[in-house]
Image (tube, rainbow, N blue to C red; front, side, top):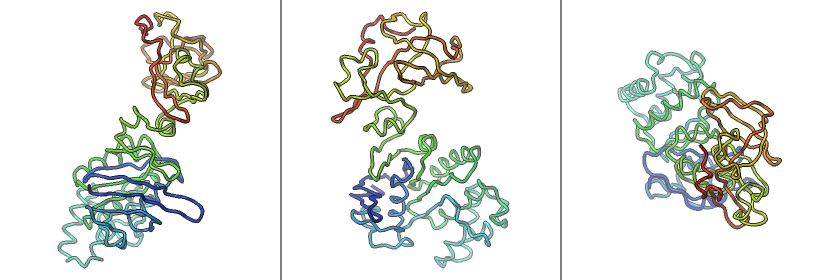
Length: 354
């Protein structure tokens, strides 16, 4: 295990920022720390870097505790949201700075800097200053500077937050390719689900200082361990009484059981699109949103507004139109447990949608 965290705990006054967090990361993995603002993501990152000291717990790199080591001795590269470049230094000098601190020879520094300039796509910009660069270029300089001393671990605190949407999307793919080429273990903080899902090998969902779930983006999306994860990842509608859903009346888990309905859990259509209307519920189209490759449909069903997608190949629905709604499955939870249940009415082979 390259990085291991055991029972990490941190308070800031009365605020419990990190609450008994434990996890392990294999060498070369790119891990996304995902969660709402104030959930504890950056606090975990700063404790890994040695910029904050935990109240309790242990951090190990390659099986060795780094608790007593200052930041400069931990083998950490850190990329900040705000770039944190030296404004009075050129691209070359910014990248070279950490190597100069280590008293490396000028020849070795030049070789390493030029290697990183080429690797990060900055060839020809070596003598420019930060104010002469675009946001995306400045962030590439920040990556190159962090990688220059050949750290064991790369930490990134919302590295794309200050960059416009188009460049941010391009840099995601670039970062993924860069990490694979360099082979460095990396952890990045983000509150952007799409970013985490697209870039990370694994995601850790952090909420109120606790690690809610760790796994691949696909596993977390398909099999959320907690109601928070189910509601945080993707879009969903909370149904206060699961028994209100057609087909779930008898197997909803009893009083107090609620349901989260994701867009892919339901299907909306006209009567002639269903072979068994008894498996469906009447609904009314509230809004139709064109999303380029499909429609996003908001439909009112039994006092709730559910959201789903509809193919452009199908008949276009109209706002206010009466439709039928089939809930294929629901994420159910109560005080005791949580689970995903397929609609029992679908056990009847005649209730398959065509």
